[in-house]
Image (cartoon, rainbow, N blue to C red):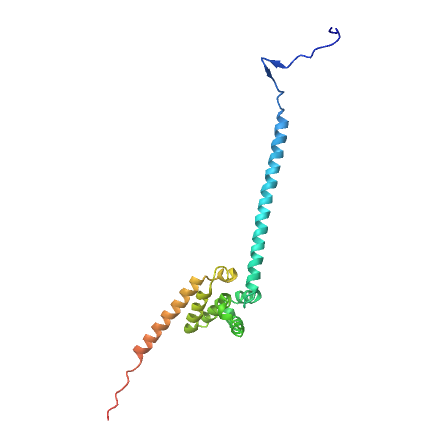
Length: 185
C-alpha cells in the first residue's frame, strides 16, 4: 500500500535524458582563472630551472678555467688591460704567464700572450703564439671572457696584416738600400 502523504519527486528525465543545470558564467571564469594561474606557475618553474642550469654551467666553466695555468683572475686582469692605454699592464701579465710552467698548453694563456705580441708589434712571436693557441684550442677551453673582445679569427687577421706589413717594409728597405759595390783587385 501506498501512503497518501508520500510525495514522489518529479523526475528531471524528459525524453530519456537527464538535464544538468547550466554552470554559471562566474564559475567558468573562476575555473579559467585557476587554470591560468597553474599555467603561469608551471612556466615560471621551467624558467627558473633553465636559469639555474645556466648558472651551474657558468660556474663549471669558471672552475675549468681556474684549474688551468691561467686562473680566472689572470684572465680578468688581462681583459681589463686590452685597451691601447694599458699595454704596459698587459705586458706585465704576459711576462708573469711566461714564468709559469706549461703555459704553452693553456689556450687562455696563449691568447693573452698573442694579444700582447700583437700590441708590441712583434710579428715572429705573434705568429708563434697564435699557432700554439690554435693547436691547443679544444672545445670550451678558451674563456668566453677573452673571445668576447676579439675572436681567434680576428687575432689571425691581425697577425696576417702585421706579417704582410712587415714583408712590405723589408721589400721597401731592400729597394732603398744601395747595391754593394764590387771590389776589384
